[in-house]
Image: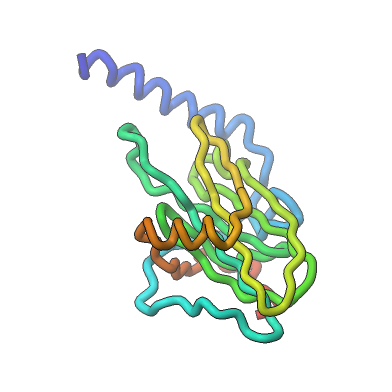
Length: 188
């Protein structure tokens, strides 16, 4: 039975590759949306060796973005999501990782974009706009929807604390590759 599935699977993978090349509309360096960073910046995600700080500073807000993903049996990879704020990439997360970003108070635009070698997936994104206040924390969860969709949802502090206490989330440390356009926010 497995031998019968292999040719069909190979044909499907090849068709994804061909369709990806034929219908790609985002060129190198182009942005999916103004709230995202340049399209050619890729990230490597690793666990942090230090514990995150949970208290915001007196004049800043803290944004937490976590990827909540349970792999289906057929999923072979960990999906990496780039996180952009106000038009610049601030890092990336992957399965059961989170990122912590310190922001000035004010209006912010959040972008989540799937990082993949396939343009079909890199054109998938989710977006949110929020107003932050000094000395406050904000939480968003990324959910993967099959087949290939994304959802970005705000969490209240109780939901976030529940997720952090019942799952083994790790602070993500992400390093940009193809760093030709810069990825750090100007307010850092």
